[in-house]
Length: 163
Image (cartoon, rainbow, N blue to C red; front, top):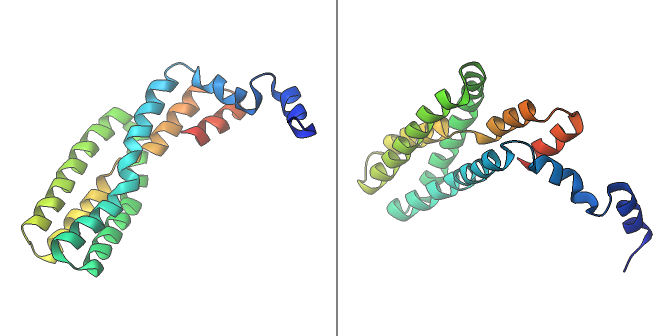
């Protein structure tokens, strides 16, 4: 079933259709490698808050505490992410991301240990805030790489959306 809209799309983008511009950005040197790393690296961003709630609620049975610690982690990330992004722009991504990953792993391990050992509530908050604050913000890192590697503004816009 071909309609006028499909015919117009085919004329505009060629045989590959509306995905043709995205196929071009995947062929940018190094794009596949750092895009795959960003995809994997973004997984904790989506699940950290939920994991915090599930862990603390299961161990303590206190959903209000679990939600509060998760929110504190989000506030930690909100406060620190722009600063770490600025540091990455100034000193390079590797010099910033490697310590951040180590700090994130340590803070998450501390959160799990504090929950399992029935530590005081304030330790859960400290570990939650530290985890949120040290979670590497890979979205801006990937966008910076796209900006450096994609020269036409239209390609850069598509690259930022796909990152």
